[in-house]
Amino acid sequence: MFIRMAKEGAENPTRRVSLTRTQIRTAEGAELLKLCGVLTEDGTLSADGLKKLSAWLDDHRRSDLPAVHFLKRAVERASSMNVRIPPDVLIEIAKDIEKILPPESRQKFRVRRRARRAAARAKLEAEREADRQRKFEERERNKPVISAYFKVKGVIYEGRADVILQYARPKDTVYLIRDRAHRHDRNAIEVRLNNGTMAGYVPRDYAVELAPLLDAGCRHIAFIDKILGYHAPVPMIDVTFYGNMASVEGAIAEEEVPAKPNVRAGVSPLGRELASGSNMVLTALGVLIAMLLIFVIWKMDN
Image (tube, rainbow, N blue to C red; front, side, top):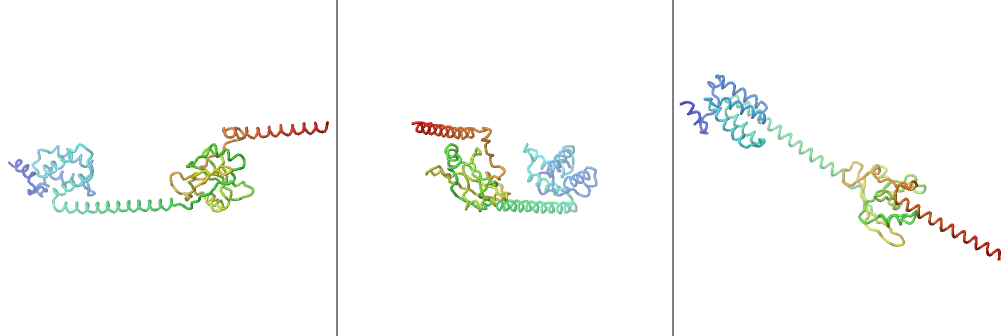
């Protein structure tokens, strides 16, 4: 009769399910109280703790204690999910455990649970504040330092016009790198194309401002906005500089600029084309001089 009434009481929310002093004096009641205290020592219930509780309840499924049937029903609801137990379900089961505790133990559990929740809220707020600070620092770190828009200078020298015609297109990425060996301009900055070939120089009035940024390790993003075509193709460059710690996608440091092709060793097709062009000019010049000498000698003989 007591077993039947206990089970009925487990279904009746108004019936007492907390462990009484008399029940705690029994081996089963004392063991359940100790187990609940260990599993919720820090004010929470873990997934592993839930498994241990479920195993104990299965071993004592024939118990006369209303607390056992009350907890078993709560655990079975969680186990029926057949998925990883979410934190909110563990919290609810922890509250059910609190209900079966005697008043003095229940108060200790509530203190621990509230302290744990307060610590969790404080940790979450600290993480949110750290994330806000990180995003703020990232925005500050990635702010543009300076932007410039200029025509490439020196395109008519050293075959650069041919290089631009063959390899440069609007919207192509270009790269700025200091020419520290330049004899006439201590702020000289080369403009290089994707394959490392040189298109020309940054104008001097811009180089005065941009050279110190490159020297300081600042990163940059530059591209060809358009190519003007007067006597020679002249790329218009749009460049933005960022700090040396920037993490902007596409922003590169000076050491990441493509290296110049080895023209002397004939490594690149462009180098071979330039060398071939120079040889043709020299050959034509030599033929012309020879013809002039022949003409002069003929005139002298006649």
